[in-house]
Image (cartoon, rainbow, N blue to C red; front, side):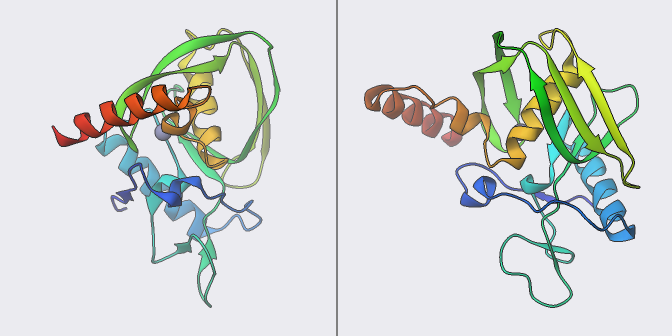
Length: 185
Ligand SMILES: [Zn+2]
């Protein structure tokens, strides 16, 4: 296993979309376990494939021979056993949202974003078997919260972009200034 390089905001690679996984093979499994080791090494709760660079196996853009596109894959460490979720998606969610204060291995700041209270997720494991799970009260159920955070990553959305939603230009400027100051520390 290997520790992978984590991409930090601001970086356009974090706003691309990975490809759906159709090959459930050893290459995918090796990558998943490298992601797991990387998340543990960084004391993270979860990680999305798009946050790491693995040039030996996967590429972000054009795919030369022998390489595959970034797979749609997340690791969720808030479950009793680590979950590898391939092609994860939110099938249903409550209208009700709450404010969630979150960190991210790709963002050098803690920010507050809106999350759904309840969700139903669908994903496949590393062998392609499908699961559907319901999470209620995601304020307290971090397994469900990590799914929301990581599935956002696979849509090219980070807490960095989410925190800027709904800000006017002046507020946005202040936000970016604050982040720039924190990054200097
Ligand atoms: Zn994150």
